Every structure is written in C-alpha cells, then in structure tokens.
Amino acid sequence: MEKELICINCPMGCRLSIVMKGNNVEMVIGNVCSKGVEYAKQEAVNPIRVVTSLMRPENREKPFSVKTASPIPKHLIFQCMDEIYRTHPKAPLASGDIVIQNVCGTNVNIIATQDVL
Image 1 (cartoon, rainbow, N blue to C red):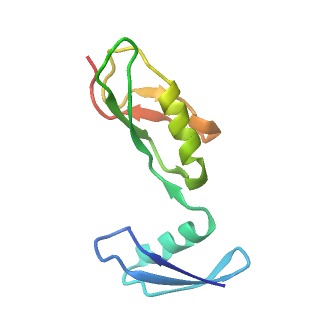
Image 2 (image 1 turned 180 degrees about the vertical axis):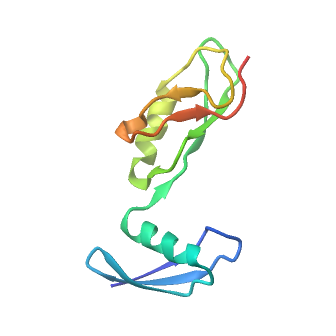
Image 3 (image 1 turned 120 degrees about the vertical axis):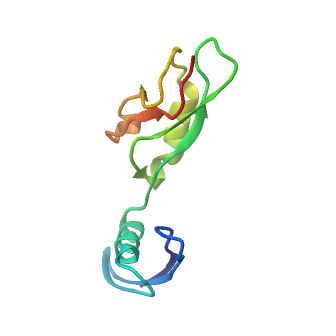
C-alpha cells in the first residue's frame, strides 16, 4: 500500500511517498531531511496534532487562547474541542496555567497561552 503526504516539519514542504506493509512503514521517498522520515512514520501510523482554540473564562465575555501542551491523536481533536467548549475556568489565569488536566484521557493538559486578568 502506498500513501502520499506533504511534510509540514520545515518550510521545504517535501512531497513524501510512503510504502506500507500492513501497519508498518517500509520506505519513505521524497524527503530532503531526516525530519521527513520521522514525520511520515508518525503520520502514517498514528497522526498527532497540537490543538489551539479559544476558551471563555467564567463570568467574562472576552475569550482567551489555549492549546494542548503537546500533540494529541488526531482522531480525538473534536472530543478535545468539546471539552474545551464545556469548560469555563475562573480568572485570573497566567500564560502556562493548566486549565484542563488530562484532556480526553490523553495525559496531555490544556494550557492558557495568554494572561487573563
């Protein structure tokens, strides 16, 4: 089985061809740097993403920005967004504060990326 991707790890945007045998990556073609190989292996088997969003604090009108502290499995993005939408932390918050622990059972926290006074 063959898959094609565009690598997003650097500005080169290499067109990658991945040869798979079952769930194993047999070969990656088209990468200029080694980052492309690692990206292709991860993306082909278990794609992950950092999620960024806005969240509304309790008793405040203006939303603030949040993100996952590290990437989560791509198939959990919508569940993660639902959890962010349902949660309204109390201000004040500082950039880097954890606003949701262990989002969707991933052992990844949602953190504030700006101060909320």
